[in-house]
Length: 507
Ligand SMILES: O=P(O)(O)OC[C@H]1O[C@H](OP(=O)(O)OP(=O)(O)O)[C@H](O)[C@@H]1O
Ligand SMILES: NC(=O)CC[C@H](N)C(=O)O
Ligand SMILES: [Mg+2]
Image 1 (cartoon, protein in one colour):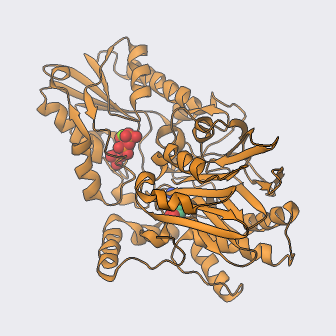
Image 2 (tube, protein in one colour):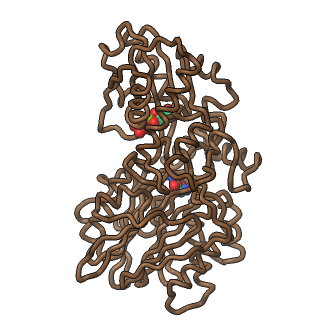
Image 3 (cartoon, protein in one colour):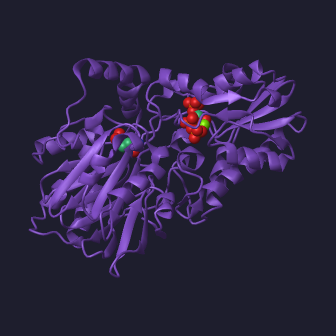
């Protein structure tokens, strides 16, 4: 789940892009990059690591220009390494850079077409490089010496015809402007905002989440609609057009469960309020199913579950306590590469406050259980800290199916609830009782924020893939390519051979 920023300003935009990327850091911790454009030349800095580690003063000084894009990466396709960091760049037509959030389900097929039919070279195994080349090829075929907004929108129309999966993207075209577009189902989020710039101009920002706009003093104009493209030209004029034939908003519900920051507004839905509703819905289920359950204290597993746990405690009239302290210097565990790193960091990250556990019946709450890495260790910690009974609640339903739209859950067999009943999961994680949110309730919690949305992408809970192109053959293929073992083999080979070599980088 990567984070995107595109900015057209009235002075150097790199510092603002940097700040916006730090606000979106929760969406990707692997790599970061910024590309700006000044006087017909691109400047790029991208590398592995957190935003604060990738950009030094000397890089920021070289990132000149009043238009630019930025990216934080959480890999879902291709390898890791500096060359896979984004934005990607092609020099023809015009000079285009692109950053992508999501995952193309037909990237392999498109890669072949790009090579055989479009005579384009791909330098990495990233689906984002595929997306950029499709867009570039479609813009090139229009054959314009200088492209206008209509040409750009036509190229996006062709992208929608050719690409499948989840994608939101921001792009930068040398001397012409910044664009953003979102897949026809709006699976991945994208918003646009404006603020007063210098000399009576308006500055525009496109970003994955509205929090990035808030922090930089932009007001939210709204979401980029599913299938829509926005383009801000060098004069600072915003153009927008629907580029898909049959757009229907079906955003990814896992953004509301885990990915997005709670202070974001996505497709008109407050993520914070949705998580409050999730807690309340879970409380009703507990009251329904186990009215007799003797809970002394409700404890969240920081960070993401705090809001749902608080509202659950409120609804049940039970004490809420912060029983686990989080080391603020350790990032999100779930989006780390490799199971051993994820496992190690749960213990480094969370430590119990023993007096909240000693002799008590505790109800631990998490936003979701995916691989079970977190809850297994946490339950053990709660018992070691002296809890009498450890109950566990998940604000999301069982995650039983892989994600193919931009969340790195490619392998069904690594999901603890895949092919297992709730009782079996309960036993595996070592809880005394386990309760999951019902899917209908989860959907209702999100829909209450925007009743115009009829359906969400709930594939990880339902196995229903809304793009209609995902079959068992595809799922087997990504499982084989991207399961934890395959990825650690890839990383080891990379370490031996050296990182995948990139092309343009101001090291
Ligand atoms: O079952 P698992 O595979 O462990 O995945 C689920 C856990 O991972 C996430 O936490 P994470 O530490 O990534 O982020 P957070 O601090 O935002 O909660 C999520 O909030 C759950 O706690
Ligand atoms: N999480 C994402 O959005 C990933 C984007 C892209 N598929 C990559 O792996 O770089
Ligand atoms: Mg968590």
